[in-house]
Length: 275
Length: 248
Ligand SMILES: Nc1ncnc2c1ncn2[C@@H]1O[C@H](COP(=O)(O)OP(=O)(O)OP(=O)(O)O)[C@@H](O)[C@H]1O
Ligand SMILES: [Mg+2]
Image (tube, rainbow over the protein chains, first blue to last red):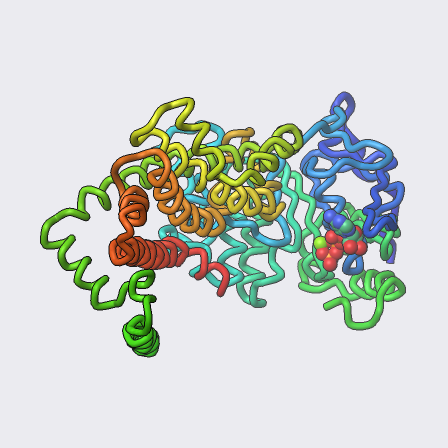
């Protein structure tokens, strides 16, 4: 088994003159609670190249969502810098689509009004935004529920509606925080296939946080495994350029990679925290 | 409902019987006398212009308070530095009893409907402001984060995210605010007007007419009661989609 493992740089060499879409440079972040400061992530160095599909794996509470929040510009790092296209990020990163762990649909707006919202903000004419939102809803299989309120949808349907809202304004980078965790196995497979197609078709860059090893192996080009809190990079595994893994991926599950990731995570985990 | 009616009947009977002893009838009147007065007022049409004037002033005061109150609350919730600037002044104004402002209002804008509207607006402003400010300030961070990532600016975030997210709090504070506007108008009429239910009370009291005072109070109580019920059902209807959300 020859799995390439490397830390942050060097795997997907950035094209000359083209900065990584996202770059964490010595980023650390602590949260203070009742005057005690707990580090959530510790000196993370990671480069995400254009067009990469990266899965973040790590024990619950290790700091994965914190990393996405940093990438989205919602919080500032204590030390280090988050770069977008080579520039330090100041304020919210509006070039990414961020599907948060809680879907954050606006409950007072219908499903379609939720999906048209980012287009309204971008002042796209009414007719066009209706058409684009409807097309995206059809795509995630919610065409028939456009006029429903989010409260009338199931958990999985809400996730799909939120995904439609995230994709509708064509962001070139996606931050996805456990997007499929509320779906049943069947729907999850269908959504995973759709996502991968969409990503390939549009050449998107993706950061996907997941607890599902199989999902990470099936979808990602690169898997970053984090330690328990404070998050450090344990492994940074490129699976795209590994023919044996590609072959095994085609024949469904990759047992050996799965086992390897599992044992990595097992060391970090209390039993039962991983599906 | 039935039980409330029964309790009310019992109290009225006790009052009617109790007022028969000694000279208390002079101060307390009796339910029969009060009912008599109410009947007389509605037959002669004497009470309607007063009631109408009070309701008009209340609605005008409420309108001003609702608009200014929610706008201030929204601006302060959206901008902590603006909030820090205004909070002390607002708190000082809030802790001043509104009735002591009535003489000042007369001094500034004279008597008539204007000071009544002003006092009504002032009374309900603080209830509306503080009620909606709390809700607007504590809107879940996930909505605000969503707004930020979707590229919403200051105003879009305030009006499309924060305001609707705090909807239930604002509705509740408006409900309370309407009652305060109504009572504020009556207070204003007691000192600065020659029409309205407040004026009617003062006039009746100075004419030693306890039955009229109590009849006016009954009218005020009935209107307040009606307003509360109207608003409760309106709030329920408006909040229904949000409750569906909470259950999901
Ligand atoms: N706003 C915050 N205030 C205080 N502590 C926080 C905050 N956000 C996160 N934390 C803490 O930081 C740590 C990492 O949280 P984070 O949400 O990034 O974990 P996670 O890896 O996404 O977990 P999960 O897989 O369960 O979603 C946790 O211990 C959490 O308690
Ligand atoms: Mg998380």
